[in-house]
Image (cartoon, rainbow over all chains, first blue to last red; front, side, top):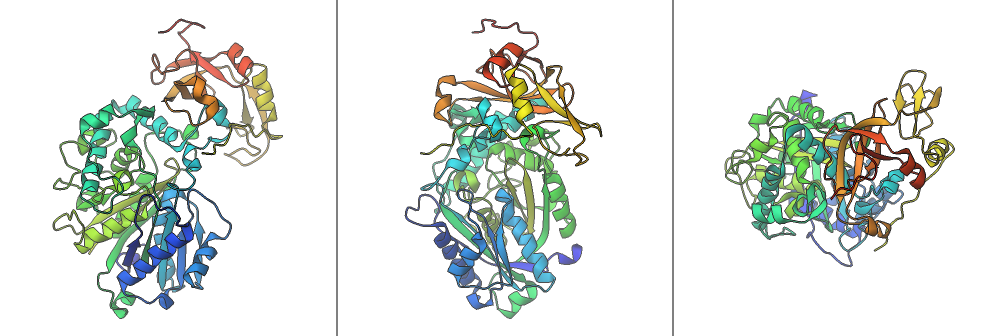
Length: 377
Length: 142
């Protein structure tokens, strides 16, 4: 696996506006993001021979990958739509990188778009199977169940989760493209209403319309195309819990640790080598547990780790420097990758000075799926 | 906003489970390989074979976790707010989603607390209902 490290790059990134985008359909948002990623890389559309699409969360369509390719006017060698929730974004980068190094394709678009903000939010409020007769509804409740167990095993965590929300909102406030730019104080956080106790309002990510895309190719192809700012892919990892929340023997650890170990081993790096991190923050508990599972700290010590500004810009490990899902956009996964790319290029709005390594996590379902990406320079 | 209603999907495999609950009895599946599980499924998720049978649970277990809803995600739940949804592990091993009676707002609940199936309530509402072991039925909690 190590021979993959640094052999592929993210050559270009693109995103639409985030927030309410009335009148925009999901295919159009995908096309806009792809157009911008190609322009960013300075690569002609005709070079694209692979298109990996993450399925939209709010609507499921048969053969959606082909629908996007038709709108892009591309007949890829490899393509299709992948369903893994938020983890799919980085998983698709893995599949693209492996396919490129296997010689099966050479220039791959990875894209995702959705419009649940102006469209259908039903998926987030859904009945959870037959257990809905107990009142078991919504995406948020699954995370609340995990958060409670974390409190039972490791003690109260509201202050720690508040630190995560406050940091994201501080970073988002500095991002002119962020959907929610209103800063949050710890007092605001604590006073926020319950959504599903123990989840407070500001523990929960945004619901957004928007799209994002990245272009992946070999480092060698990037030189041939004279790509201006290619960012090397150093590490990739994936793993899946699969069991739904109520069936997992352990609620407070996830397979994120397996995914991270795979990525760290491929990159021959350790947690302490990371200068900045973009950690999937659909809910604040996800960040706390991912930091623990990634071994930035020991299990149960996430609260101490995120305290005292460590995860804010200027701190030891700035997290989610464009605001993450809590502040920049609820569009899952790829915007975190794009911010990682900006940090490695040195072009982020809140640039971590001298940052040379960035780790990015994506996850999906209720911590069902996980994927990890390490970028370098 | 459209909301999907909470409707059971009863299949030939799960039908005995729901029928038992209507009689106040909670059953789980037990395989010849030793694995025991819920929710109902056709194949044992451990050995993948179909050599399993329904076994009635003792009705004792422990509270793994719980949440309290302060927002109704379905119109039919408005009158229940606030209400709890709990994750219980039966002493035999299987885990299930349920409610803890007389603790609608979660007060009095604690991690790993012993819980028992309330057969009367289970029969009355045709879904499993538990209560804290040390809390008598219909205790007036405020």
